[in-house]
Image (cartoon, rainbow, N blue to C red):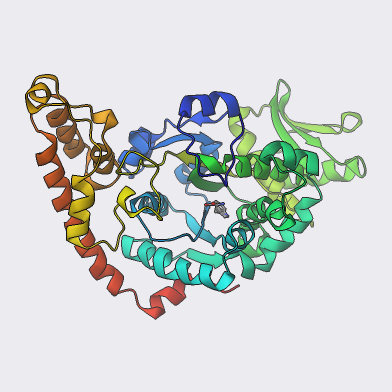
Length: 441
Ligand code: TRP
């Protein structure tokens, strides 16, 4: 199986994805609640998988700097599916993230033929304004364009040196017909993700990329290229935490520099084995690996290397469309757009696919099928303010106490109240506020 980030296929067999690609189950809902973010997105498996999330959690717990980067593909109308992404970003802002959002204008151009001007217009009018109205805080947040950020494009070229065409073919299924712009798009995305660790953007630090699972190929490529950028590879061993020098020359110098950097970071018991291109921090165990690795990454960054820490990723499910098919901005009936008027919302939701039974009598007797219902999903993702409310909706549904018509009525009322408030907030987004977050370099 291969994941194609540009197809319109929905990868919905989540356990298979985990097994086949080594994505780990996301089990940090409780822990995040303890840290002050209690959200159904994290508790109920909307965010279902991750790679390397522990590195971020550790930074949050220790109040160390970390950074979130995600990207948007400017397509069309902003809908509830897009809102789910920004709800995550808001949660992570609470946990101390510095936020970068890439507008994938180069990607939209090379894969869909969209002009950069059009991409910019859609990004600002549909995405940025809605993000801000939804509560993205402009402090320590920036939204930039791939086409305008030189550091991103430079990284694409420079890290391109470390990946060959055979690898790109096997990851993405590229062939002789693939245009070169498209072929470069993954490297641009690598540039997006890693540029936040360049010295001028804050240096090496834990990085989180929350995305849909269709983006996993890019994350695998990026994590590999981050590792490839390193001078030292750090690993727990039986002799303590080992650091292994990757280049073949100046091994002794590399080890001496590492020793100094580690002493400054509080690790003084370093034993070297130059013949083995290694040194060991005696007495240190797996828990110390992140601190040792961070100290060495910082050293690398200060001596002309990249020292990129492999970025973590979380993967979310996509909300089903209200019709039961894929949610899509080009198919209005599949989702509530954030600019829909009340009667349109009502119509869309009354037509939504539910888990209702054939007759009311049967439903009172058996209860409805919550897991098959798009309105239930809408409550989970968006309309239930808390755990208790969601539980009440679930119980009333599955015991047959509340039938679909009534349940939809409540959902419509809530959706319209939310949209009314959203429209007011959106109208209050001034050019000055936009200027605070939108960067032109
Ligand atoms: N490829 C992403 C999409 O199709 C957009 C994107 C560009 C992105 N750069 C990114 C996502 C960096 C995450 C991180 O939606």
